[in-house]
Image 1 (cartoon, rainbow, N blue to C red):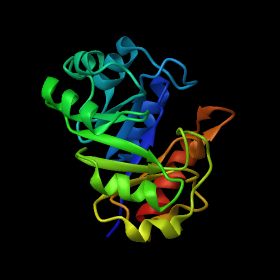
Image 2 (cartoon, rainbow, N blue to C red):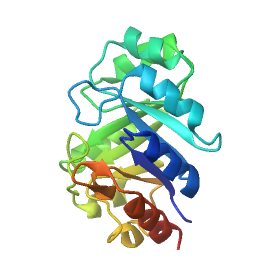
Image 3 (cartoon, rainbow, N blue to C red):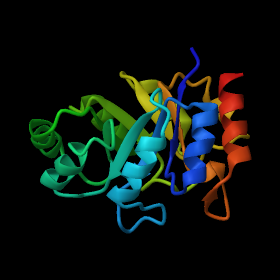
Image 4 (cartoon, one colour):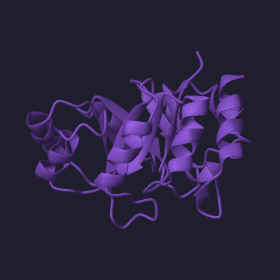
Length: 199
C-alpha cells in the first residue's frame, strides 16, 4: 500500500500553489510561536482558502492550553489538530471534549517504551518522530515493527530515502526540512518527494 503524504511547515503562498499541484493528502501549519516555520492564524486562513479541497490541513500545536487550541480548531482554518509537545492523555481527552476535529499525537521515539506509549494513546492517530520535529534526523526504524496502529512517520525523511520509507508500512509519511533549501520549502524537492513515494 502506498502511504499518504504530509508536507509540514508551509510558510509561503508559493508553498500552497506547489502542494495544490502535487496533491499530498495532508499539509501542516505550524502554530508554535517559537518555531521558525510559525505562521499566524490570519495567514493560515489565507492559505486554507487557497488550498485544494482534497488536501487536509493539519494545525501543529506545542504545549498550548487546550482552550486555545480548540478556539483555533473551531475557526474553520484546519481539519486536524496535531499535538507535538508534552500533552498527556488527560489533555487529549479534555481537548476532544472542547472541539470536534480529529487529533494526531506526536511521539519522540527514543526506544520501545515510546512505541508502547503511542500504542496506548487515546489520540485518533499517532505520529512517530525522532525529536521535537523538523530536525531532519531519523530514529531507528526497526522499532516500528512493534507499532500496533496506523501511524505517521516523520524525522529525517527526504527525496533520497522516500522510496525506502514508503515500504515500512506507515499510514503516512510526514516531511518538512527534507523538502527545504536554506530553511524554505523547495518546490522541486516537494515534487521529487511525492514522486518517489508514489512511484
